[in-house]
Image 1 (cartoon, rainbow over the protein chains, first blue to last red):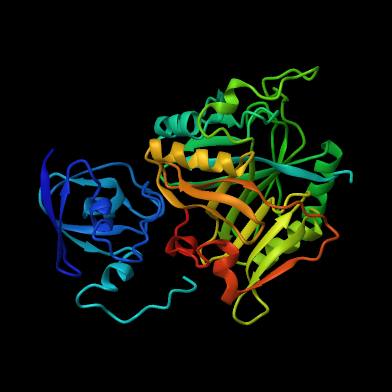
Image 2 (cartoon, each protein chain N blue to C red):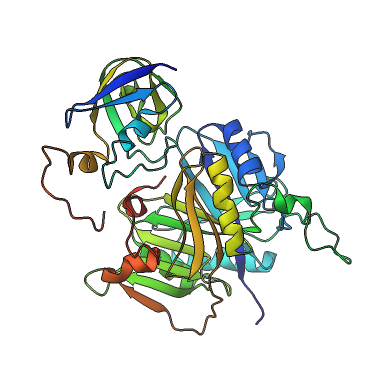
Length: 115
Length: 309
């Protein structure tokens, strides 16, 4: 099992992940309240991220959320990628709000209802 | 009470991202019975206790979600009448030839203003539940394979204009409103639960900007204990659980929400009350919606309004 470091650019948070866990599982393990992990199957699109540097293995993701161009530009779903090197990433999906909320430099509070 | 007209949910065609992974999931983890594959590559399943040939059809596609949801009606005359009534209402209908879906008769398809394709059909081959019609046993080994629900029970769909969908389902197809959740204005519905039978719901909607979305497809289990057994099977198979086991305030069903391998949410539930068309609908206000949806937590989880396929 290989271990890698993932940096979330939005919050400058860093976590360790392995090639056995998806990047989303690592983000969820940060324990931030309110991260909607979503479907974890590549279907709902809430965990969309952009990988800024590093390499990863991926599985099929819904074209409703990840276009061919997205995929080529390393915009992917965190639940469907596994790091194969250290990664830097930016959260761009619906979870961005939850990632930023409660982080050291948290943004404005969001209304929880209705989405 | 004699049930006429629209009888029950009959089938759903789901889009999956990886067919064989999904076939394994629906067959071995959810515990449906595979009943066939067609030339298009679609795979057909039924719950063990259902008698008609299929209720869940999987199609490999590049996005998850629902292709169509169908209801069985009580005969070809009813099918023709509903087709005419839908057209008279101003909706376009399409006839799909018998056999386009395996062992299934002619279908009438139309689109609701919520963006969902709904089908009606009168005929589907009775392949039985594995037990004879004469002096049967109580269950078969298939009743213990995987989660093994009794039937595909209902769906919750997300889309705009739910009041227009409600009008069509109630005025043309004979459904009735069982429960609903009002938005802050006290007039507009956030969500509606509709029945065509004595079930607390056969089809439900939540108001949502994007059309044609699936929130969940529900499978009925026999008891709360079977719901807990389903949770164990999900844990053993690393299925992503959304919430539960818990209870809904609305319909009073005991439930788990979880995701299939493509991210389509499904529900394994039991209980809920019986309803009748002469009953007054139950109303929930937005400030109590948390208790209505998840009775024990008394609040919505982040995924309820945002995670759909």
